[in-house]
Image (cartoon, rainbow, N blue to C red; front, side, top):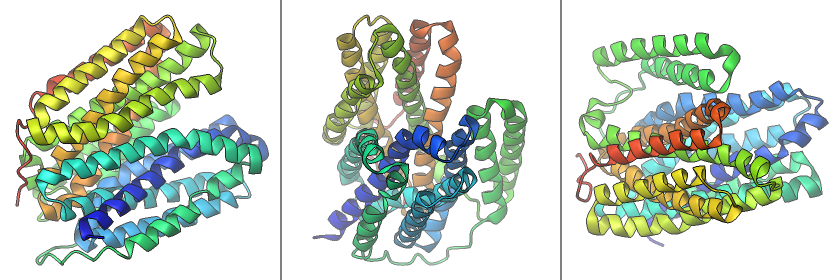
Length: 434
């Protein structure tokens, strides 16, 4: 097997492992709460702690990959992620679960950017979109399979088995990583800007905490914004900033990140609203609600490879704009849905738009980055894909007070904003910065 194909297999397997773990453990939370005699707030912190650790450290993890090698960081992330999973499965108390979820998030932040950094170094720009399409389809499939696999495991073996599910795949992926030849060293690299990394992590941690933990909203928001100002001031004066200026000077990069944030926020906010719509309005039980959501995942799996092919032929801009308009129409149609079949059709449109936009925007971000900053842009991409849904769900929870149609129409507007941003994407195949 050639180096690009081995690298693609490693990238796909690593991304699937994180996606599967993210959804499979959610199903186990009620059983975990009862078994460990925990409160709802304590169980919520298991998710909140993970989100804060991931969001704050993704770019830092990507930068470490640029400095010390994405292969090394991927291995480190896998080992730590697997060890934390094992510790969660053996946890004696809810406090231990929360602490290990934070550790798991930190190692996940090393793992995720490395999967994209490896692809950037292994594939030329004109072939990168196809590789990312395969990765996107795999993530969608793993995310869809997570609740099903988790539900079976909880019913048969209990919640601890769910936490241990990732051990064998992690070992398999780690073995596969060893087959990837290390990339040649790039001369002249400096060390990590520790102060900039700390300020960046504090910025993201504060903003995410403000979104997911309402009691701390205003203090966390103030702290996050203060750290953001300090980070910007520090970056302008740093000899070796955390985010290299060459990355942000390419207009396509921040535009594509904005597209990713809009479409992921709109999609996950919509899923949150739809859960209430189909259960309270249509009378579906949780199982049938989950099965209905599979239409979105199936559309993502099919749309991603098609987007890769279309992007090679027509360029990122027309593909992203067209698919984001489809996602906008899908969300808007859900506002007037009166039956499950109509909701399923809307979710198919949304899934197709989400899958295609993820491929196009990710290929644009990674393909336009200098090879020596592939990890940083991978971290930025993953940050957009992690914080967008958090913001979308937080907004959806607030908007539900005005009714599901109003909430869905606002979320459709967010998707339309992504389509407007996509008009500023490049019209041709990425020409990476060297």
